[in-house]
Length: 83
Image (tube, rainbow, N blue to C red; front, side, top):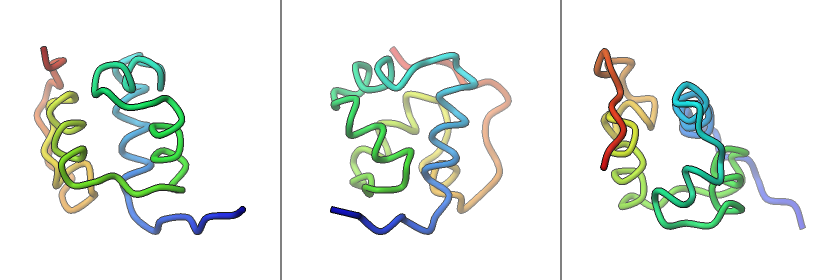
């Protein structure tokens, strides 16, 4: 079964943030309590990220949900890892 790709910035921003941190999809999945396949689908644009998870992922990377969604290019100078 084929799923339509999402037409937004989230997959790209998510992959960029994750890779800049040196994390794998497995690392992110464990940090936010989701499966690796879910994170992979988010990055591939095959599955949307629920609003609550957008906030959680953004907090994990120290950016705003607006940045994650591509609504702004403003982000903190440093992206500290959330505890």
